[in-house]
Image (cartoon, rainbow, N blue to C red; front, side, top):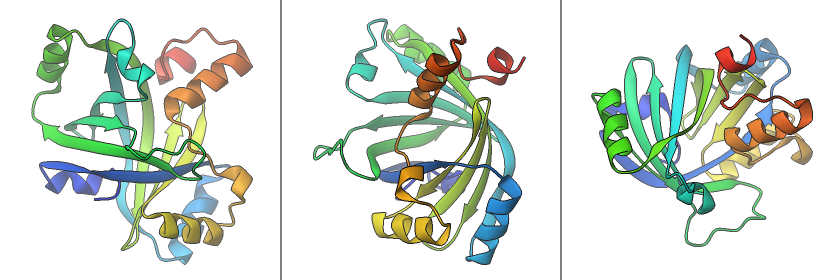
Length: 203
């Protein structure tokens, strides 16, 4: 599996290199029309998603650009660990992460286990996600409290080809995480919000 996608829930556990890029979306209907034109099909309708990142009080995982995430999506719980690959290139045009994830039955119990092991909830972010896919990769549309973004997830060649077909310039493509986008947004707006949630930002 090259990337995270709700359709991957048929697998109990997976570990692979995730390759992706993001871009801002100015019109969801226009993007969805274009995705249909170039062969994408709807895989998961618009569904609410909540993510909690866990870390030590010293933020030891963040210091290593690693994450431990508990995700609630469409009635399912998924635990994910991401880390930089051994051959990480910070200047690469695509985001690469070693991703290991598994479905869990009781998210609250997992959160308690993390807490007992010294990992507390460090950051929460929410979005409404819609997933499209072709036979090689996924395009997910994420409506967040700070704007709408899309992610292309697949092989590097597939991402480059689909980016061109979507009319994206290189300056429109980014590899930032939602945590980093949130930090940039807080600096630009002066917001004191601690989490990327609809309640904290839009009320």
